[in-house]
Length: 488
Image (cartoon, rainbow, N blue to C red; front, side, top):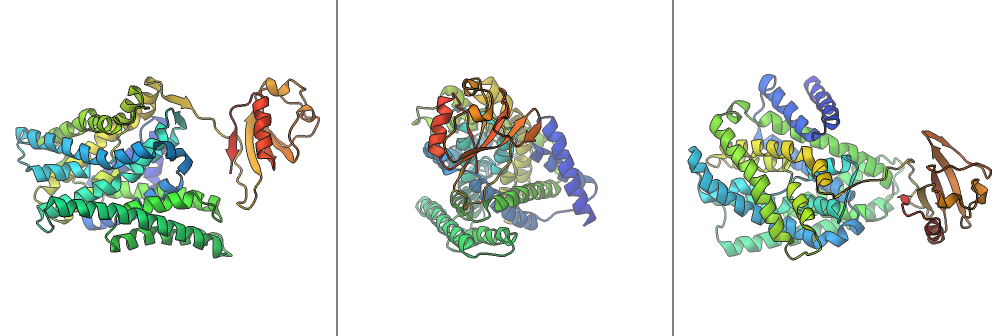
């Protein structure tokens, strides 16, 4: 217990340091696990790591889906799904070809199926890394790139998982190696995963809204049960559990549910805990002495660089060819944010458990390539967006308010401009629709409740509640206010 507490404390502290210097916090969590595994803790259980990683990935994917608004991803659902399916396949095939040709030059003889297995484990972008980096930077991206990247990273793990499991079966001679049956198997996995995720998500919404629990904290426990229902029932029916969990999260997050704010806060913290635990355990599992062998480092460096500079960009450009609305700069940025993280390392435990020949080498190459991705791409997510002219600063809320889900009134936040003060400087001189009230003003770090004779200044932030949301929106337009932040 003491060691566990110490690991968590050091990981969170390292995360704060990482944020200060612009590095992904998840990279530091991995480093803490490696440090403790090298010096203090003897840990070698791929089975336990895989089990805990599976639970963590379910929580991360569900939380990512729950935080994603369907109205945001609707414009990019086509390219997002193409990237999440064909993009994974293209990446795996391109990278596998490189590994098969390059490995013998360093002294490793890898068959093409073994090369494809290595590439399959690395073929998906990591949802934990993408979600945490994009959402912590408070940076907006033009051309709907943020919802596109989040949709891709949240929904491409199932395809990589299926390719990995398929290649493990081929190499261990425990599965059907025919192309036809395997394509059918992939389709069944995707269709059943999507269907079960939707149905269990709807069931979760129905149950949460009708159970009427006296202790509101238990709603989080109930939703947690539905997350594991999504994965377990789907897996029993030979569907893809990870896809089901992500879609269930989308369904829950895009419906009105009781205690939504409580659930969101709980899962935000719980998701971070799961990310920390997963990265720590993966760091503990790796054998650092094997990792730093020169040939392993050389192959890993070549694989990591090829993935970043050629395999990922080639697959992105192929997938986005039919979608003309993305500029070349947008395609370049999507190519760059192909972050790898815990998921490839987690998938690399499957060959270890199946005792595939060369599984240790595969795990070490995936591990180092992931670190390269996090160090090179993870630290430059914001810088690359600025360099390509795709970034803008997101407006930060001055008020943190959450209305009860039964209240239909609209709660908005606006900044006072010169046009708003054209008819007078006091609050009573500003014309607002009926049943509309300025609840609070934020000015230079202070909050106060206004009165009719309160003088307003340019730059003041107003928290406005109204039962006439359409009239209020029209009034804002007349006042020249185009940035309106809505609170839910």
